[in-house]
Length: 147
Image 1 (cartoon, one colour):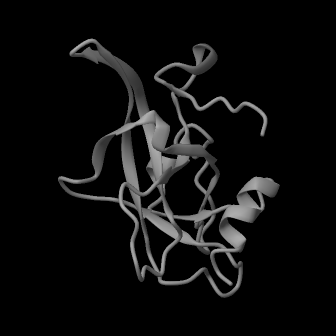
Image 2 (tube, rainbow, N blue to C red):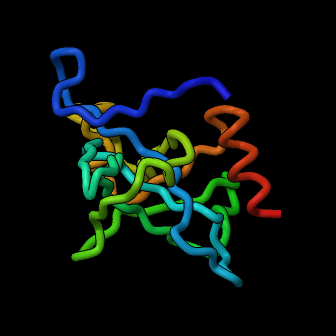
């Protein structure tokens, strides 16, 4: 696979912030889980630290939650919502990050406000499609989880 850039910056190209979303491997395997073998999160910071002579590379992430036990019937895409509460933020080892994820807001029937942009849509909406059509890697990861 090619190299991907996952961004977590408060000022991207002298403009708005950019905090990308990612697929993250589960810490433990779930035996009879309806959901895919990974979770979705938004990266807010990459950092590393040294403890007892060993360097640890980590990411501060905000989790998304799966909203159903199967993908949306009309689109074939899974739907997630932003996690709320005390467990919404976590620090994870970067080794658990699989790749970048693309989320599409569930816009609803109303007209999209003019202030909505790529920089703030993840903050403005509550529910998102996990786009399995972004590229063939995403399609393979998400499509075959529903069969």
